Length: 616
Image 1 (tube, helix red, strand yellow):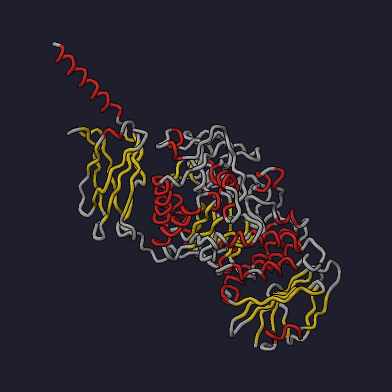
Image 2: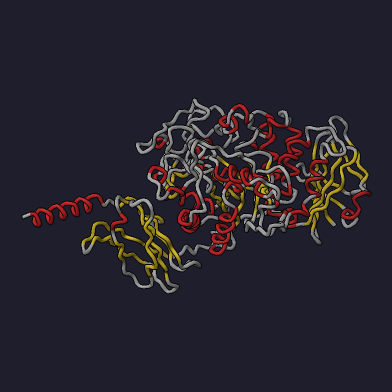
């Protein structure tokens, strides 16, 4: 009798375990055949899923290893997908003994072979950076969503305002016609936090577009329509941290999935310690393991399962959407070895892609450390093709506000370029006057349209990949210290009832209309000029408030003249520039179309720029 009761109790316990086996996640949700790397690791999440044995049968797919970890709600399944494996679907069964307690229909798809994808971006492009929540509300019905906590409130500078992916799609013609050739969107994946979710950097699901922006399918539509208009797409990705509301943060696979401390520890935000040969290990640890914010747990990329998860997530999005580039948020904050492994894995699959890392560092030697091919003393190579040029940003924001001096004024631009010997690939630096974390450029230059034109003339003709922050072209302003919401204002015309519609140029003041016309003229001219894209650069030391640069090839040249004098118009004798000018006889100014029948002297108004195409 006791034995019978024991058997009944055992069967009841077994039935209880079966009832609790609830499969919630399999990520990546699908994959592709014909990938360069045949290995795929599935993260499987469900209550007590580790008590099961996964079983599958599909020709060309081998289960290499099954990993159980600290949390019984997780399994990691290592698959090998053979080179001859065909696209198709198969069922992964999760068994307890002979009984199936859960199953998942997995699909291996054919790789995307469209000819207009994975092009990468380069110095032939100009990148338009926009924040989806603040650009245009194309679908007001998704402003609030039952799955998400924070609701729309456009009156709050730090609240959600309702912009979405449909709003971007609706205005692709504006972006293309203004002259931009690449589009970088701040993160648009799910951020299901209580507050401050509009910026997108506290991700709660790495595989899902936030429903207040749309769906994965709508993002794919955005990419496809952008490609049809010859606009490349750059996706913003975050590996250093995620949101505290992320589903795997609520139920950690392992204790070391994130960096945990006895008390809340914030990063010291001192990126130079990563390349500092004299750095104290305590400073390095605080930089790498401290949290970005209380609601952004710091991910531990030294955990091999997390590292694989993040790499595969990147590859999934590139293949799913046909991306052309990736912007990596806070590059130095993740373990540098992981970032190198990540870049190599991505480039092995997509060698034409371009990857730009946000290395927010003020000094050039520290910046060079994070770009591919740097001759670093410790032998480190990030394999990151492109990095952000914060030193040039700082020079650009100071140059036109200062009186000319030995190291002041436009000498800052000259000195910054003169240090390009430190970079292996100066042509692949992302250059910018402002972005979503910085003072609006028009604010920085004291709302002076003349300075704006000079800066844009320089930025759009010098080396590197220019990036323009949404609204810069219409002189949007705002100071970062007032709060990030004030440098991320809504683009006028993106919401029903806006009194100004910048998309149609309706209601702009004269300076805004002038700035937009200047940018549109310059951008569309630049789009067609290989000499700006690939030409060599020559610069002359600024003298008497005049700074001259050339872009040139064997057969073509463009001369850029900047006059930083506040009041003095200048007549310039050009014999100093004969290294280039002796090869050319005439020229034509790009913005106004002024023709120069001879080039022995040039007149240039105070605080202005000339961009002259030279002719033999």
